[in-house]
Length: 85
Image (cartoon, rainbow, N blue to C red; front, side):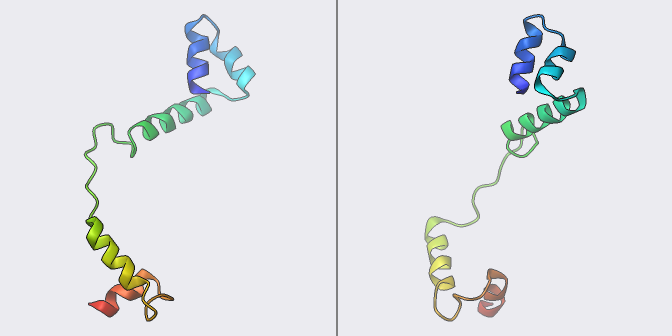
């Protein structure tokens, strides 16, 4: 919708008419634009360096194996970690 309103404006339409057709107001458009930008940058920071996953695939497999053992299968991870520490 944000793109459509931008296209309509660049083709000469008035924003007020575009808002009327879409059934939104100016504040809603600003919120939608902010959401689009946040989604494009994944976390709201345009140049964020995202961390690598904390576990390797082998470590992840070991964690899953332990957490699926019968003695831990019915416990949440918050209870498994202290039990193994």
